[in-house]
Length: 408
Image 1 (spheres, rainbow, N blue to C red):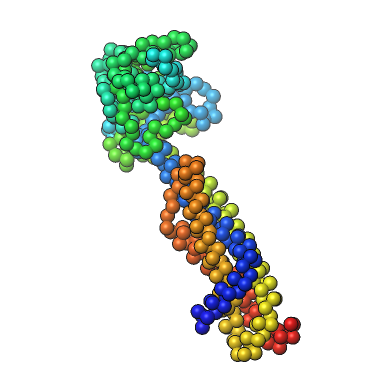
Image 2 (cartoon, one colour; image 1 turned 60 degrees about the horizontal axis):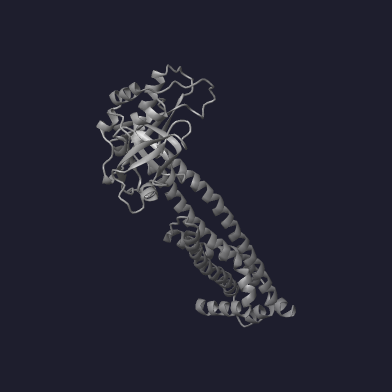
């Protein structure tokens, strides 16, 4: 019986093909939106997490000053003795290094010029950032102690300056001083870093890095110490190290209870979690919009089914006169509504998958297409059909044969 009613419902849909197609557009848009937005949202969450954990899931940094504080007093500057205090009081720290950055510095070789961030630190900086040399070496304790003009390049910088030429042992010129475009100093290239093992590790603001010893940085860019970067033995140590750092520096800077920190601590695990939440919130708003579209589509289905009941009162009256029960009439119209929604859901799934592929290929936005949202969205179309098809079906079922035939 159900199979026969399903065939009748399909015939009714085909009989009004254009009207049915226009009716299910809302369902198509809603389902496609749910699938596409879910896939893009998942990709955005993963991308955000990768971006922050690219610095290392065991990495913690502390910087001088606190731009989030309302306190106007100047922060107490960092000194190298602070690093010794950290090492002595935080046994869970494996590596630690000062870290300084000179921004947007011009470097040149043989007429080729590019702009870089000049990053400096101790030899431990490479272990903290999990960088390895694919050619040559990274600078060591000897280079740091002697304040040598040596530089380690990232692969993209080496390509920009040298092309296919071996950069090792070559002397490049790096801008220093107040006017970095005219005051250049010679640096010997001792190494080129391998591409990162972690996806997204080097992605930033479009300017790549080169690395010089911390003492050399002080020689040309000033002695002010802005930050320390460190890595712990395990991921689980990060939270404890963060608490210890706050305690150490509040005591060292003689901050009273209630005083804002005049420093900032960056826990990249926490940043990654917050970035995921932000991406999830944006995705949630977009998902609500898609659900509203689906709701509008359901209302359209109910409206067209009410029109169908009105148009087919004679058919309903004849069936009832021939012995069709209210249950049969109800099931027939419910099946018709559900099938319209299911067809719309199928087209929506296809459209959603196509949309994710287009977004990923054309806009380079990461997407994660999972089976669960597709199954849930497809199942939801059945629920929409039942909810919005119930009233028209019930109305059809309650028609009286004599009145139904008399109306025609």
